[in-house]
Image 1 (cartoon, helix red, strand yellow):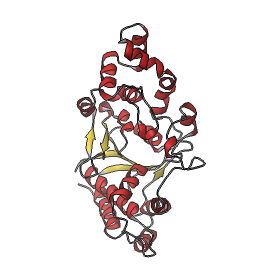
Image 2: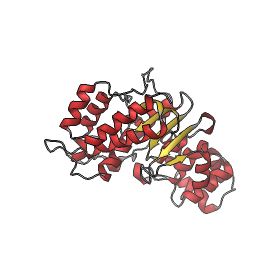
Image 3: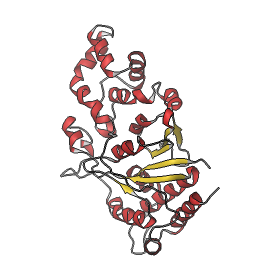
Image 4: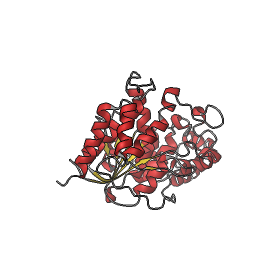
Length: 304
């Protein structure tokens, strides 16, 4: 068992993964789907068991598409908007979100969000507060938070929770050829269609990594293009994307300065409200998922 100071869960990333990965036949006694609820509890129990954190936060998207990011780049997550800036979410998942909040509250796992901020920004802020941080996510943007000096790692679930990868600077260098401190510039150049970020046309991961490795920053890359150090084709591509490149760094960079106060993130030894947790477990047919979480909390709090 590894010992971790602070475990940060990218909650929506995990419950989306649970929803699409677990059968829809998992339902409450009244027929409400609970696959996302059960999956999230299983994931939390797994990482609590494996990393034995002293503190934990379920980081929340109070704003999944913050207005300030949209003001900088209008296409930011625009393809995922249904109407009135409401995110397109399957109805069978949408009905589970309040259930997730209720179960987490009864379990005593703190949910932390902030006005006009994504969970990424909450994670960025909380991860900057200490040593020994582990961030559980399927979002590559959070690779920018890796910090070997402070023992801050990303537990990346892109290949699944059971096969999650521990991302440090060596992993990033092997995978992309860039360190964490350069990841934002690399991501800006490459773009990310899933977030509505176009990147620079004709510049993929290899070219982006090569440019960042050679010049060190987006600012220096653009200066090299203007001074004729890059090929005419590449210089033209960068010039054509300048309206995007200007604000993109601010959009991609997660905030680390949210006014979150001093929330108590101490991992509880068991459910904060045992009666409510037991009632919800029975009503929602959470079964072994609830049991695993309770056992994980007890084991993590026991002296070893």
